Image (cartoon, rainbow, N blue to C red; front, side, top):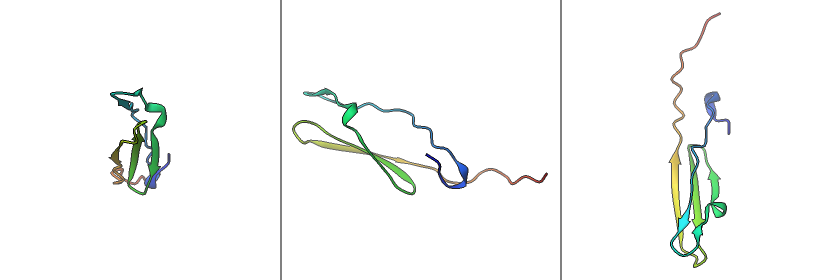
Length: 66
C-alpha cells in the first residue's frame, strides 16, 4: 500500500489462532485508515479480537537538489 510522502508499508505478517478453532489466520479482516491498519478476527463462538498497527507517516527524508 502506498502512503503519503511515497512511504511504502511492508506487511510484517501475522497469524491468528484460537484455543478451539486452531489456526484462524485465513479469517483475519484488514481495515485501512489514514494512519493505521486494524486487524480483526472472530472465532466460531463469535469471540472477537483486534489489533491496531500505527503507521508512522513522518517524512524524515531531506529534499534533494540536482
